[in-house]
Amino acid sequence: MRISTNQIYGGAARSIERNQSQLVRLQNQLSTNRRLLSPADDPIAAARALTVRQNREVSAQYGENQQEASARLGLVDVQLTAVGDLLQSVRSRVVQAGNTILADSDRQAMAAELATRFDELLGIANSRNADGEYLFSGHQGATVPFARSAASSTTAAATYYGDDGLRSLQVGPSQQMATNVAGSELFMNISDGNGSFSTSALGNGSGSLPNQGTGQIDPGSVLDPQKWRDALAGGFPWQGASNRQLQIQFSLAGGTLSYQLFDASTPPPPAAPLTPVAVSTVLPFTPGQAIPLVTTTQPPATPVSTDFGAQVVVKGTPAAGDTFAIEPSTNKSMFQTVQELVDLLRTPLGSSTARSDFIGKLQQHLVNVDQALANVSRVQSTVGTRLQQLDSLLSATTAIDIQYQATLSALEDVDYAQAISDFMRQQATLEAAKKSFTAISDLSLFNYL
Image (tube, rainbow, N blue to C red; front, side, top):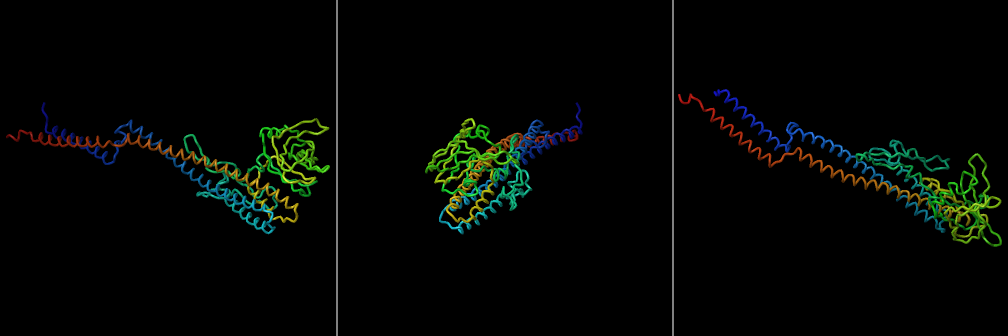
């Protein structure tokens, strides 16, 4: 077979170019630390690396959302701590205000301090995050959530303009995390009294005068929640469907102080109020004794006994005609509680009867402050649980990212030992090709003529 000079030179050039191309590819792999310089290097590995990289980017976005949610909830937690500290300060003043040696001027000074606390509480309730969104306005981040109510308002000291919504971030493939607390939940929807019912001094006789004795009613307690719920739901034959209320009225006969339970419920407006109806026999009273809320309808009605599963304690000595009320708990805002305390402390006390009535009302407000503190603790516990979940999610996301990095490294990164070995081998091959071409190119008959 005859081999022309052109074939010798062409074949040698292609061989050298091929070896140089492979050597350059190996050099690029070593310099970039990447085995896959293009999908053509390993199509299967390139496709898998693309999928892993996409999953990693999605996981990284979840990680960013987790950090953002943690930052937002951390700010909420700071404000919750501020609310708790403020309420503790208010509580301390309420306890101090119960000191009987204080003058009206002292209580008015405390009222001025609590008025300042009211403004502080309103400021916390209207706090914002770094993005300028209000923390406690629900979904309506651009809406000022709280404003002081009109002076003529008798139902609330502040009005809520937000909603009950929770702003959420996607922190996992199938998990969203609320990053705020609705102001209605934290500041407004707080059950008064002991959480099931509230107690109060209703007044003497027609109620136009405060109670005349020294009797003070405690917040009461529910011993059997199911019985309490059943009694409210229809287990007790209320005379009216509205304003459900039990009353404890005291009487004096033959030198013996006694009490009797009355049903003071009324029909819905515009129907006229009904006169309270006795629902127990007249029982002797002992100061400090537990008064069980157990009723029995009186003649001529058919006797029906109802156990409310609750009790109250009246300390001191009520006067004949003194009346205490027991009503199912309703929602009372923190603002209303603080404002009512301010108004109470501003009231002059000109008699022992007024002082006794003041102490009773002060104790009721103290119970409401405790309810507000308990609500703050509950909400803060919920926020703390979310923060713990985010910490766990962030740790898991970090661990998953490490796994993604390891997978991508195995698919794309160069094996230096193997690449260096291949580079040296390819370099030797290129040198051999060059030397062999030099030797072959010298083979010519003209060298012997």
